[in-house]
Image (cartoon, rainbow over all chains, first blue to last red; front, side, top):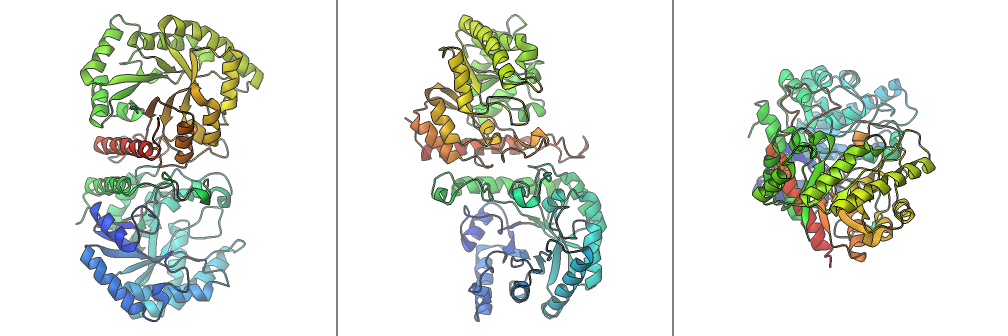
Length: 310
Length: 298
């Protein structure tokens, strides 16, 4: 497995896009998860303009020069099931698929749509129809769209485990529509890592590897930021031996893609007045030391199971 | 400014001897140590029952080049095991350690009055022992709100000291991680404690749990600045109160033994290789140095 890292959760310390690539390369990473999650939130995003193709090509050249390659990508953020958002997000996701094709990224991960009060049947119908509308772009580009498990047990996202994810994948029933497992989200939904990975089997084409301490017995909206901690692997309570064993058993060949969050970036205890304070975020030197260690811990995990690939 | 580190349970999980633990911390760049008097240490770092214990331990300090900065008496509830705390304070005196962080006792469902009364009597007795061996006792913010402690805030710690007549031998330890769990505004509490702070324990976490969830999920012992504690306010408070004592790392991350998981003893990823524990300790020392650079103390 090739070891990659997501930029979507690593904010601030490692700099803007190309500084991030340079810095993360210095930490040992050669592969990244290309981030279109936040950068495509607004209509004036560079990839949503007329000259997006030129921008994408320029990005590809710069990444090659720095020596990093994207193996997987995050699709634009938003709630597809929100009627005010559906068409806009669909268009942005179509564009992100086209960007993936230019950047030679084979897998794009997206969050399915769910609204409070939605039944499982409504959820399945809506998301099948939404995915079907993306299929022409996927077929044109050869990119695979990966459904990510999101939401806790008390949220209306009916793709908490392998069986629920398989329901949607089977309903769409297309080779370019597969699964990405987020180990941290699964932990929040009290899921079993081993069984979920075995259950997904050959549908599993992507990973978001992150750790936490499980879910809290409170409404997810109130303290979600204290649960979905996005810690590096082996720093929370997830049993990564189970994860590695299952990945080996299914012959997983996708990226071992880390999704660690910058320490402190998700904390809501601070106010905006503190943004400029010196200890609000780590210095670049501290961040480089930290992410080098995170890289080596993940490499150790892959080496232990004999699956590390340069 | 002096930076010290505790021989936390991380190191013990690797089966290291006391000398090896000291050497590990020395190699991580620490010159001062937080000596641990806790039940977990009774095998090798025994309370001073044996003759020659103090001489041998002082020899270890000398050999490793590590000077003791502070001692912690942890893991005892003095309401049920007060003799062990006295014994530890005597032991600290024998090692020449001047500041000893001590626990306060609590009983299940005790009221505030019962808590205060029991701890005042215990502290009066312990101050006698401390006087005999020239040691200062440090009390600290105690427990998360799920434990029936009534010393969550500086105002409560100050109240206890005042009730005892503000004795010279009773001061405070600023346990930043405990303040994090209790979700206290650090600046205000530090200012309230002021000059009574004789030691600062550094670690981080993600705050208190809303219900009686596993307490292990509260006091996580992450490196400073890895959790949600507002270290800008902590450092500003220490600058403004003129603190000039030790900064003591009490890190327990990453977990070396995953108690909540279904890991098996033979699972190769159950224990973090020692190489990473070393690196994370060095990194934590760099974090503390960065904090001190950003907020220079007098």
